[in-house]
Length: 252
Image (cartoon, rainbow, N blue to C red; front, side):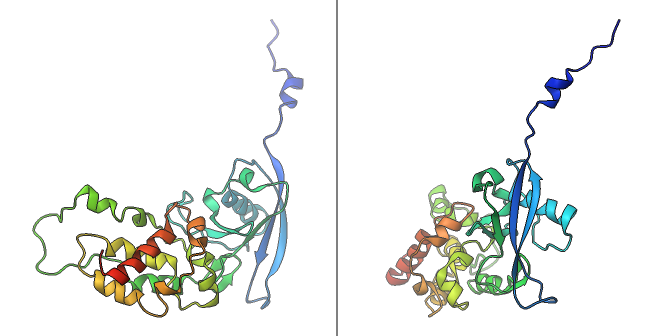
């Protein structure tokens, strides 16, 4: 009895899920030139894959010198924030099919921070602003002997701003930050908000005075760029306005 075989014609006619995509990446290497250049890479990729997967294909199979940050690859660490088609996004959360793969997909470093190489920027000014707003719980008195309890209503007051992953997408989308790196920036204010409105914290006044500085919340021009850029959906502009209101009323 003959061994059954697959219908070769039917098998070969199955459509391939892969498409050809042009990745247009802004390259910068200070050891080679002081100027950045755009470089195109054509790759075959499933459109359901992510921009991060496309960058991996380029680095692993085409040009090992391509430099970018990434860690968890699942939208939690925030390390792969970059400008994709002119908008701040996380490469690990951006699907190829969602950004018009029929045209070249542009990828460049986020703005407002010094580019070290290719898609990697110096994050130190960003994290210094974060540290300056005291992003930790401050209480007085002796160390507690039991958990500091909090009602669900009190927790809900600052729930939105606990979602920040420090990716810098909001801060590097802010035109004020682009023009003046001394501005604290949306992410630092969001993390100050998280503790200012925490009922267990006792340093709200101190944080408000820090943000009352000329480089603090009053520099915000309410363009909503930060809210649009946040990959976690935080209402960043709303949080900044609440901090401004607390500064005026001293109620928080």
